[in-house]
Length: 198
Image (cartoon, rainbow, N blue to C red; front, side, top):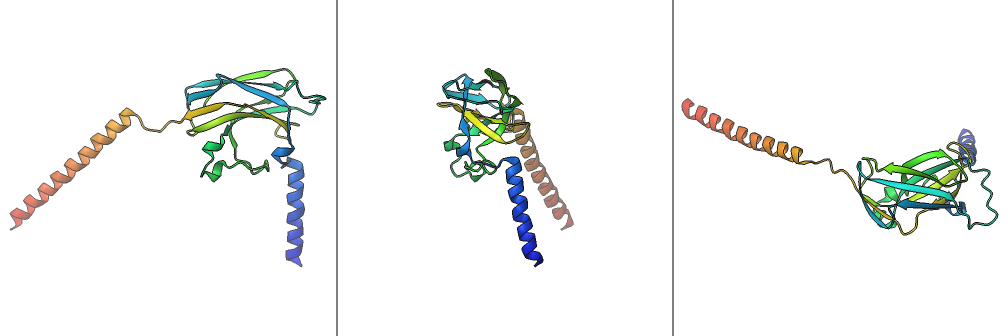
């Protein structure tokens, strides 16, 4: 009896959470935004150094567009399909709560009906991959996603920081040589000590 009550409670709780936080489907979102970047096309960016300017606004080609519920815009870097191959942690899912396509926030700000833009410096923790840019609009701060827009024909190729530099390579070489020389020196001392003992 208690187990059945627990199951019913968990089902009700999960449906309540889903309804409150808008765990909808991507295919149900309206494509009502236009998103573009400068530069365009195939762009090579270095993490921690290079910048792109992202511009978004309402798609004026959509008829009878009601944007009164649009309160917040959230722009993200998203993995292109080629950067998702054999990487389930980047997998595209239609269920928005499970989707891992767009993991890197560019900007989150209040929505305005006129075009808006933001200049973004690629963060140091963005991994090497190919990206596009997608913008979501929500019905409030961190509310339900209502619509989206994304770049087309854009391939942002980000080269991440490897963590290695010339100074680290030189220091590693010096310490490696020192350890080999130390080992040889102590081996020589042990041999010499063994000869004296006999």
